Image (cartoon, rainbow, N blue to C red; front, side, top):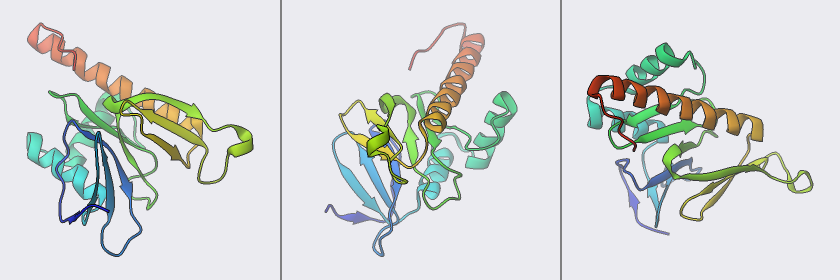
Length: 170
């Protein structure tokens, strides 16, 4: 196991934030090429990333997304729109089982075959770094979260195009 750190700053390399049920750390951070263990909740990592990047809160980002999309539950969060960093939750952000997934790292999503499906493994996310993450949510919910995040990205990119006159593909 790697060293346990007290805090973590989301970057382009961050793939997912998983809840840890360990006395020494709260979150398992999956990056492109390594795993980190952090004494900070995933929600606090998300909130601090919003504050550090654009001087706004998680609640502010969430309210803006809701206003533009009407996605009131399990709202995707734009962490850094200039770098194209968007995360979506698998459950309510207050749920102990919630995992935050970085949209830009997803290669594909899929169903776990019925014969292999369990309460803890119903769908799977394949990431560009060849990491696969089995999730306890249905494929339908995973697909919906992916789609909602894509809509959020498209709305923000459209607004950036209208504002700058240039489409920035992140």
